[in-house]
Image (cartoon, rainbow, N blue to C red; front, side, top):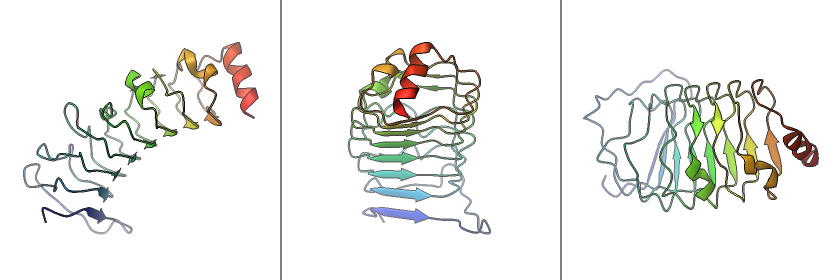
Length: 193
């Protein structure tokens, strides 16, 4: 199992549950694709090295955070932790310089998008729809195309550079009732329509 490259565990009918104690679970470092609905632990195993990961999809997980510290993630293209209601922190993706899509829909306990996101130069899609405690987006890369912040009801601020992003084609802000809509932001939104 050390050379396993793809692991998919889907729970379509929510009738089957896999239970592990935190110390029992090990994942092979050779994994390139990890899809696991309702991942049962609060963290990925500390022994797991994600340097070979291309896609990580752990929807409806029990994760609080993926790992401590920084992982070497140069192969990672997409991460989806949607509906992980216990996730309190966006994983450190500062070494994931090839990531193209980050999807964290309805991760209700997230508070902020870290400033290093502006260095993720290949990131084109960021979906944080329904992250109701998200207060601020500190930075976005210059090449971002699609940003979904719909129903981020605690969102108060966006990066000041957002109006100068030329590649952005879609910026969804409906339901962001606390957001300060400056005249510049309103003009920018009108240009996108």
